[in-house]
Amino acid sequence: MEEPISQIGDKPRYNLAFRLSGRVAAVVLIGLILVYLKAILIPLVFAFLLAFLLKPFVDLLTGRGVPTSLAIIFAEAIATLPVLVLGFVFLSSAGPLTEQLPKYQNELVRQADHTLNAVLVRVGDKAQRARIRTEVVQNLLPRALNEGATFVKTSVGAVTSAIGTFLLTLVLSAFILVEVRRFREKFHEAYGEDHPLIDDIEGIGDDVRTYVIAKTMISALTGLSVWAFLEVLGVDFAAFWGLLAFPLNFIPTVGALVASIPPILLAMIDPNFSAIGVTGVCLGLVAINGVIGAVLDPKYVGNAVRLSPLVVFVSMLAWGILWGPIGMILSVPIMVSVKVICARIPAMEPVATLMKG
Image (cartoon, rainbow, N blue to C red; front, side):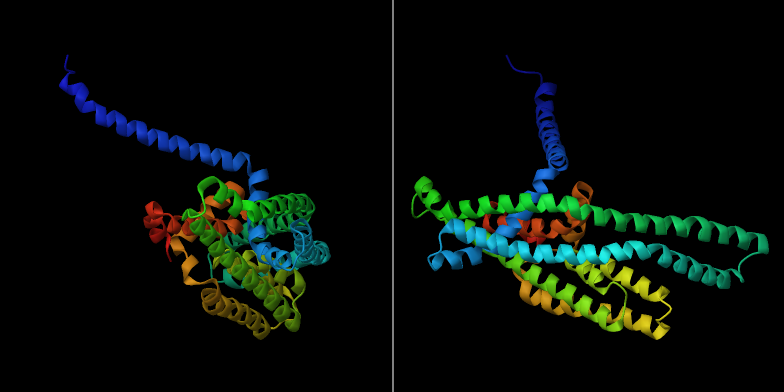
């Protein structure tokens, strides 16, 4: 018996609605997994990035006859050393900074009050100027400064919990390195010697490794340059600002801007700095980030892993919502990995093309 025409016509509509609802449900499910399992997923992503960094060194050691287990342990120990040094610098700089925050807050409020008074002379009557001054100086500005102070103190406390995350990252990266060493032989055993997929997978690993190593070196250069420049000019807590610039440099454009604001504000409220000195701090930080971002970054990171600015911005927002500031730092390495993987899979090449910068 034939179905009514109305039912036949409705079938494509029902199928389309079913497919769309299924895809929306899949996206929501993935989002929930990323949020509720971030305690393990964040160390796992860091572990993959660390494994990409350490693999050439492990290969070098094993090529000279060092057993794989000892090579991995030695590489992990080498990776731990700079993290301990950075943690020591962070704590030794952030502690005094936290203690000095009230002094800087009071000086900033005083200068803001002086500037506001000069501006309000030309605005409205006396009562209106008093209301504006009270709202800005006694409410808005102290609230903003308290939020900033709370952020710094929270960041100092977060270093302690980050130690546990780093230990988990080390363990996970060790397992990843062990599996990578055995991957080729396991793949050949499963799919045969001549399967072309093995070359694509290794190509993905090489491309991501190139990005991770290059970006890490460039970020380290940025942090050291900021540290040295601010130290020469005599800006307080130069080591802390240089250390802050290192992870934020993984966030294109926005990261460099965010890292530059605190030392500029500190120079503005420091009585030892004149207007020319503050201008010098601004121009120097702009020059450092401009040269590294516009010259070194494209040259050494390479066009093969360049992303569209829109993709970078949207991914920073999305991963920032999911994982907070850590997600913003990891967003670009994650999207670079996605782009490289898509470029290596013929069916996904259009996606890689759309993501290209």
